[in-house]
Image 1 (cartoon, rainbow, N blue to C red):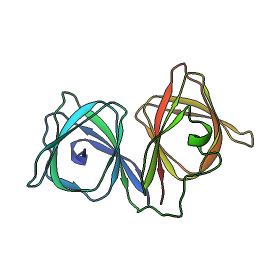
Image 2: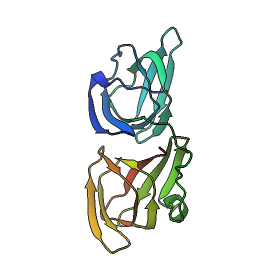
Image 3: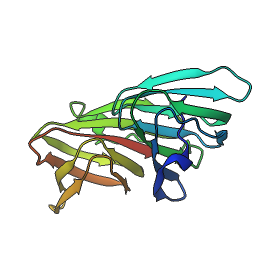
Image 4: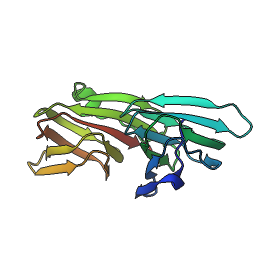
Length: 207
């Protein structure tokens, strides 16, 4: 389990009825105040790091992650945390506000995992979320695919993408590394206009 402490340095990026998304920067060797997490979370780590977490009356556990890694962090009781690696770590924390709805399904004929496994890979899935990683090479295109659930995208690199919908509408979408966006259902093709690969994490909500 990894945990961020919002008081150290944080910014709320999205807050709606499904999720709160917070960008947290934890300083190294700064022990947090005791705190808990009442909601399950998805954690996206923008830099590599290592953290000690000590539950109240319990034994310290150390977790380590790579830059761009994404994990599931279940709700947790009172604990303290400390970044024990040498540099600040920025984490995108997504607090999942609702239980999963069994009627909500991610499957579709044009699901990106089905029609574009070259660019879309499953990270993990549970009753509340499905998390995929998208990597599109420089000047590469992704075929027509469909997102059927509301989703948050965390941009691990800069994005400069031409998006084309089935009706022929064309839009250029741009984001900087570390930014986050909210989107609903969509059907489109994508082309990476950059001379560098694009990478992002897509979190879909089953609620």
